[in-house]
Length: 128
Image (cartoon, rainbow, N blue to C red; front, side, top):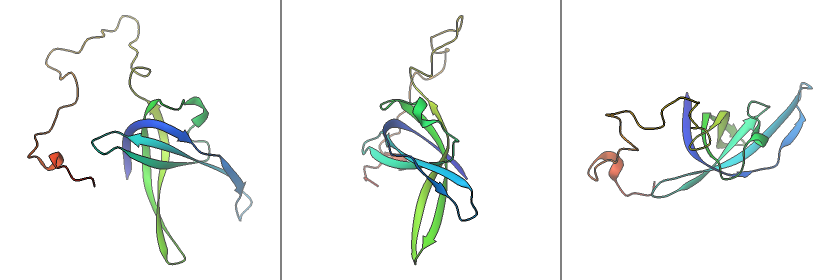
């Protein structure tokens, strides 16, 4: 199941590497995204291998991360990992129109996000 989330890149953690039991070299790196909202959340993602070149991104950039959930058991406890496999810039840096492309919103299109009414299921004020 592939999921996506948008947020601000806040931190790149140290890259780890090693050799697996069968002799294959591996690398892994974690990074943090702050997801905006009434109660902003900072979430850690993991990149295994070289699927995403994290050194091409700057701290503070708005990005969209595509990821899978991975759960595993270790010594009777269960752990979840958000396994990122794609990341792209969003916002002003990514939305530069090509030459000759219109920069205005087409007629009949909303200019921004549509707010949900307070009585809708998404409009509750619970922090979780």
